[in-house]
Image (cartoon, rainbow over all chains, first blue to last red; front, side, top):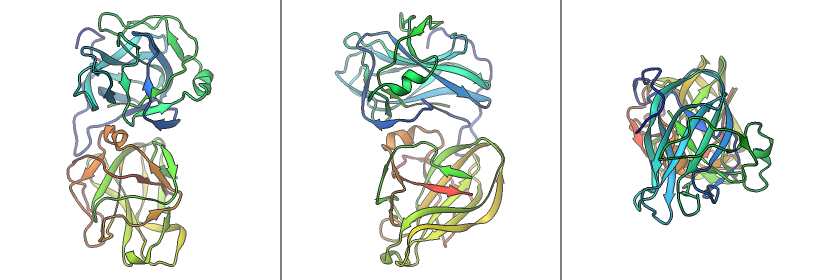
Length: 189
Length: 166
């Protein structure tokens, strides 16, 4: 994976059947199902705030995707930004091949230690057609009904800075507007 | 008090869970404060066809070693509602990550009973995304939960009961 911040800690070693800590996002639970996500515009990022209440070591991400349209070379992006909207770590998952169906695990660009505090989850796709990379297969939270949950979360919305050159932006820029779409279930660990 | 699972999905009435007798499903969960527990409870429909069978719920350390567990009879056929049972070992959990394992020794299918209004129905993909989750290689034996989970690697296959540890 290209670029990104440098690791700030060693990954948690695997012990027994469990490799260590995990972070399940988004932390705000809604109706779940199979829903498309995206904006209708490629490279845009949806931003959701979340709180970390403990020290967490992360090196992997998982997302469940179901490829639609099988557009080769497109990716689904997941990133964590700190409270100053600066990129902490990210990954991208291929979702444009016919076989990219199911749970896909990718290394984060940088293994990272998150300390307790407020962070931002940013997700998006570079799908050139619709901006909807795919549908999440059983991994999607549907906030679409009226968008109320997203509207009441301070710091949530759509970032001014975009995915570019296959990379997530270093900063989010202004986050504004309402996030009207569903959110995929992402696990980092 | 702990209410599991921590990841909530749509709740369905009368949902069953379990896929094979004595098999254990495993999910990680977070304890964010010191928590003392002595009992567990869940809501069940007891079916007479499962006389002598139990539903098991246990807490394991990330290493896979058992911390405590309990079992609830599901085969008396004369009970419908919330059933509580003492844990084998009262326990104080320090903050951290733990593993929740549950299963049944019902001899037919491993489905101990229908869950009445206490079933969380997840697409198993979501469960399979959680690190440490899945199906354990160790199984229930002799009416006891195993001392260790063994290898937890098989895909998670079942829906979830709601269990309250308190």
